[in-house]
Image (cartoon, rainbow, N blue to C red; front, side, top):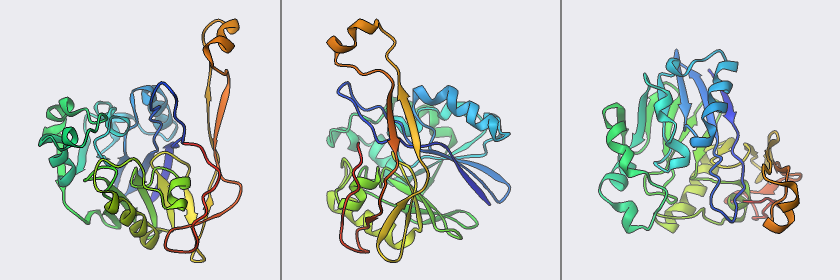
Length: 266
């Protein structure tokens, strides 16, 4: 059993819109290669490069687990032509029956679902995907949002059930297109089941029995201005922005102590 974050989630946004830099992880388990989410359009080249650094070609991937059907988590599905795609039944219903439209959710590329459908393998609730690997429903952000738990080591790939540590520690729900009460209950579920959380848009963190969370590692991204240098000030841009995804001090976890958010950006 082995797991590695190929692309770390970065908790940043912009006045232009969501950047959608989500976590993408590779699992080696039971003789299978499994990818947790696929990232968005801008991740394609780097994702392929990171896989090849691990000695993996895209065609080697056996399984792709889609935490939910937002574009920034599933758009690169076509890079993996031999992989089965795993999606919760509840999320499928949200997509194909128009639930996302009723919720005002603009991030669902429903037009792509028919292209994926022949390869999609549906599951419901808690389900053993492989020995020692269990799906964990984390509804709220979307109704069918689902995490994936490596049971032996307690690592929860939470998708946007937990977008970032700041919201999680403060007990503030992520953007909700489902039920806000379910979103907060999903935080409690995660705190009870996981020892390490890989959020959808943040670095992984450890949960202690004492009720603290500690970030593991430091993910960075640089935004580079490609226009004329003299226009930077006029356009309100800053070149070479570094977004560090690391907390300097532990913070309490909902259900394990007093909530105290670390100082982190979105």
